[in-house]
Image (cartoon, rainbow, N blue to C red; front, side, top):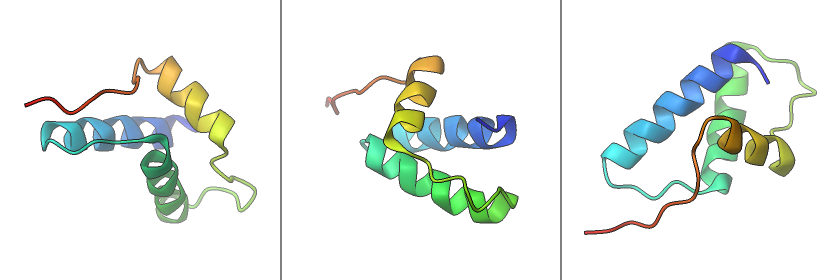
Length: 68
């Protein structure tokens, strides 16, 4: 994956979780696609499910339940 994209996604996920939002893989994929445009990544970058799953594992970002 692209290091600048990974860093931005990790920061975005942590920020969302700090605000109490549940972040699923679909939300991460949508944010990655939004950042693709902002960062000028290649059109071929599709943020596939497999890529997002591997990104989450690589960065220790598993699924979490919202607890109160």
